[in-house]
Amino acid sequence: MKLRHVFLILGLTSLIQAEPKAPLAPEERTNGARTLAAVGSISRHIKTSVALILGEKDHPLATATWVGADGYFLAKASDTPLLEYSKIRYGDNQTAAIREIHRNVALDLVLAQAVGVTGVKHIGFDSKPQTTAYGQWLTSPAKAGQEIKIGVVSAQRRQIPGEGAAIGVRMDEKPIRGGGVRVVGIAEDSPAAVAGLRKDDVLLELAGEKLSQFQRVHEIIRQRQPGELLELKCRRGVVNLTLQVRLASRSKILQNWEGEDFANGGISIRTDNFPQVIQHEIPLSPLDMGSPLLDLAGNPLGINIARVDRVTTFALPAEIFWKEIQPLIEADRHPPKALKP
Image 1 (cartoon, one colour):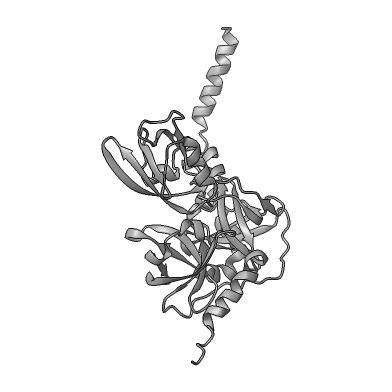
Image 2 (cartoon, rainbow, N blue to C red):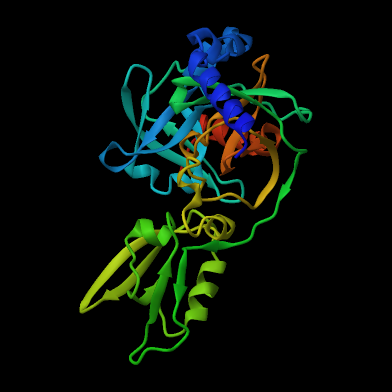
């Protein structure tokens, strides 16, 4: 190495050591407070418009959006398959039982009521079409109303075709003497993994049907929707087990076979087969699905329905679901009187 090169390197090293980069002041590290000031006037109402659905052992399942002051709410159906065994947490850590009213599989929404709850701040959805533009700013509550987040519309409204359901297993194509199908691989964070299925387990029955060929497993699952619960019987060594497996979107399984989305906060169990979506990039989690989506003026645009990847969330436009949900609420509030004999 030439002498002048040595002096140059030494000089640069001395300069770096002599003038270290000063740490950023707290106000320079984020502009979050300043940015969120744009929704300051509506943030309180947004935060109180949601609640948290809890499952067994108070495990968080999904976010609920209040759609009636008398306790009616909407949630993501595929995340809440057993609402009758769940409860809702709202307000100042209050809880209530849940009464399910209607499950719309096509839209992946469930309408229910928190028993005995009144006076909640609800979102006033409308059936009139609302326009959204690419790059438009939006806002939504996160962490059951503890935070308010903002982002932009990141694509044009469109239909999201369905690619079917899956449980996330690879199976041996060779038949087993005495029946059954052997599992040779399980996807990370898949319904099979969550249900407790393991490599080398032998699948004996699915949805009440005995199994002898691996193709039949795919056929049974293709007839179902993501989010549905199926009973699965298997053999592990000499022990027979019965598991409950909740189907996921096939696209979720294929995109996440090795668990790439763990670092990205996860994705929803159902991510496709929607008649129309508003796509945005608000940084929400799968647990935030079911929360409302609004513009910066506080106008309700839809309901968040699927966390697809690190930068993509789908929301159902209000005009898609409210024309079906509103009559169901009114009918439940005012049921027809019994006819006199």
